[in-house]
Image (cartoon, rainbow, N blue to C red; front, side, top):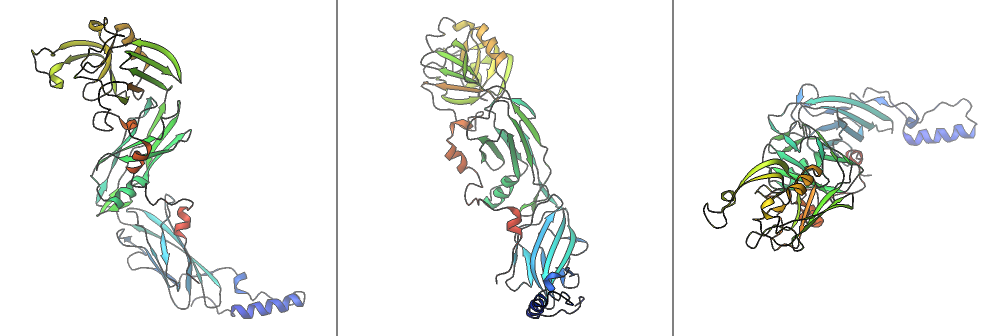
Length: 414
């Protein structure tokens, strides 16, 4: 051993009591616990291939003690400050990581030891891991900007992920932070797409930062996390348009107060407008609408080919809120459209100018089915919060009250 021999802990304790009895005169400190930690370089080492050079990130980190020394504590962090969880053998001879190492990362390992006399030792080691060969990248949406309070956040993966454990690793690294803070969760739409929404709509004038802490993290099957461009979203006023299909009126609310009541016509029998919450997807000042695009045969009684102005889209299949001057006689009284919400040109222009992408359009009392959650736009809000949470890979087994440092710093059983 490189450090000098020390008296046993019990002897040191007896000598300390004698010194106290004599008032401390002529007595030196022989208690090893009171001394500066010794340099444990010769007593602590990493596994072969991890000390110097590039360590294989697919293999666990291993710290061992030699001679009569035992390890009492290990803390391993990467350059980003992320802790590496690990487990210490009961006899203190070995510590090994229980979480995956990151690829292309630099780690600092701080080890505390104790010799047979109870003296404390310290060693700090640095090592690097080799780069990843297969990367998973994430693309967040929408692009940075200002949106309505109903806008979900999306994450698209470059590689499909089916394994539940790998999904949990990815989801844990996808961060959504808002001011003011809200309760929210990711939901796996399919193997490559996730959506994030709060329990309720976003607050008005919120700031939402979306980023990933995935780079270098092992996901599974030789796949590691790659870079992801962060986005920042802000929300405007809380704008909600509520269409009562049976009453033939739309009520537009801004921050909870009614700002306009608009006579409308919605889908006639056989083309009933979808019920439920939809989110504005886009706006077009002019669009050509043809019945053939929704499966209506040209030349049939229901076919149409119309120039449409001030069109606000709410589904990818072609449902809009738009100007319908040809049906003004039915607006406020009857449902005669092929599924869209029609209104006068003046009202459609006002609506177009006063809503934005992400604003909420809700339809009630229609004979139509409820808007589906994911396959025709953003129907995310038509799923209950309980159902939404069930689509999270982190919903089960989530531990509360433990920090990464707590999980990484382990001591042997006594």
